[in-house]
Structures are given as structure tokens and as C-alpha cells.
Amino acid sequence: MNELTLNLALKRRHFLGVASLVFAQRVWAQSGVSAVLPTPQSLQAELDRALQQKQPLIVMVSLEGCPFCRVARSSHLVPMQKAGAPIVQLDMRSAQAVLDFQGRSTTHDQLIKQWRISIAPTLLFFGPGGREVAERMEGGYLPDFYGPYLDDRLIKGRQAL
Image (cartoon, rainbow, N blue to C red; front, top):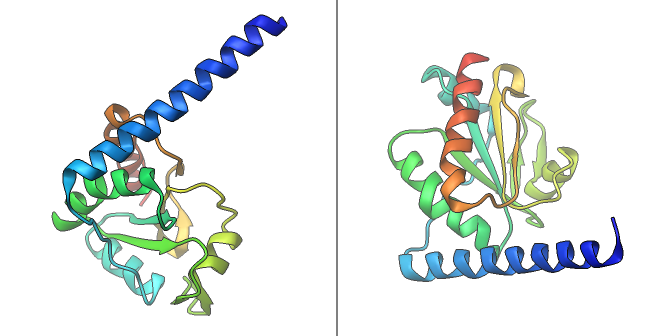
């Protein structure tokens, strides 16, 4: 790849990133709603409830102030959670206590580091034994495609139960 082509590709990538961020901020501002997901005290208890519904447990890893997290939460996850889908949220950099799938006390941030997550938002799909049953969704997808990707992961997660 020559220098001109590389430079154009980098400029295009930067433009798309900025455009996506602006779009996400506008959607969030227009919604006027602060979408909130429950934070678990025990992941195993949440997983047990999800499995009783024959559903994978969806865990959203979020970051304070992340516009992509707000869009994913308000546009997709909170409506799903209100409709009965088992979804909880863990927060990067949070010292809030939580029991992991083995019943051990840890913090949101320690668990997120243990799972090797460095991108917000990240969605994880857990099944029996606290194992992941579908591919993670990492980062902010284009708004038009987030829902279909999420639906695909849920189908795969349900099939793996």
C-alpha cells in the first residue's frame, strides 16, 4: 500500500469514527432517558434465573461516560431487559462488589480484567457453569446493525444451552 492510499484510509477511518461518535451522542441526547441496567450481587444467582427461562445471561460491560454504551443500553438492552431478557451490567473501573460464578467475592473491575475485556461496550453471553455460549460483542457497532448482531448472538446462545 503506498503512502497516499494509507493516508486516505487513515483519514476515512478517522472520519467514520468521529461520525459514529457524533451520531451516538445525538441519539442519546434526543432520547432524554437515562437507561439503566441492573447490577448483579451474584452472577451465579442471575445465571440460575436466566437458565430457568432457557436463556443465556447477557452481561454488559460498560464504562462511565461511554456514548456507545449509552446507545446500546437505551436502544437495545434496556427494552430487552424490560421485556424479560436476563441482562445485567458490570462497570469498568468500578470497585463495586460482586460474587462471580463460583461464589467468590470480587469487584466489577477485577472480574472484567480477569475476562480480558478492554473495550466498552462488550456483551457476554453465559450459559451453564458460567461458560460463554456465544461470541462476544465488542465495541460500538453501527446502529443499524447492532440489533441483528445481538439477535444472532442470542440465537447461538440459546442453541448452546
